[in-house]
Image (cartoon, rainbow, N blue to C red; front, side):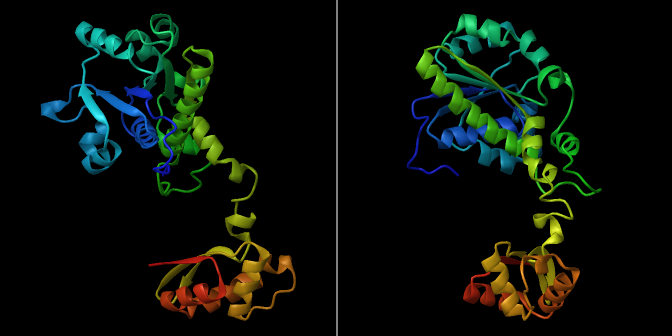
Length: 294
């Protein structure tokens, strides 16, 4: 999380129309960086939030919107669109997550916005760049396209959405910086598929594939079973690996020893005989990076 002492966006007014997760997560970070944030939501059913996140996970919604001013506005009506234009006149950055065709219907495409509000910047969150921005998709499909869904299990978290939110907050910082220099609003587009592709680079490079150093081939960088749970070991650097092998009584005869099946088997057998409490103690005593799990 951003340091409370650093507020690079203090005084910057951000208005968001972005729903679900990436936009609100970006807005949360912008608020933490000092921006004055307002979010517009459509009318919801029976007085409930018009943001789907507010309906299927109120707890997450509450966390995302802490300190954020939320207003309800029906942009399908002329009065709602007129009020939005008045709000944009005093806004520094508009954050959206609509498809380009939806923005056009609302009169919010960049060319029209820039003409009406020359100092306003815009950050558009889309699913994919260019012509693919109209394609339907979600976090899972973008991760699958990037090669990050290797089996039948769902990913442990929403990597593309959260990665996209970081890229969106970064885009706001860039737009504000350039707008201050040029006195003209800037348009930045952030694609969730690009966020997934960025996160997939270590796999593309081979680092996290099964034969890669941090994909399981290195005996010091794996998850092992222990007597009462599991242990995630990250003894990748030579001095950490040496400490691990010394404690486990495994002979280390150079870096390649860590890539031998016999080394993995020896460490697996050693971990299997030890409890989480014992491993935590040994890690603290011998400076070994590991984390025990149930």
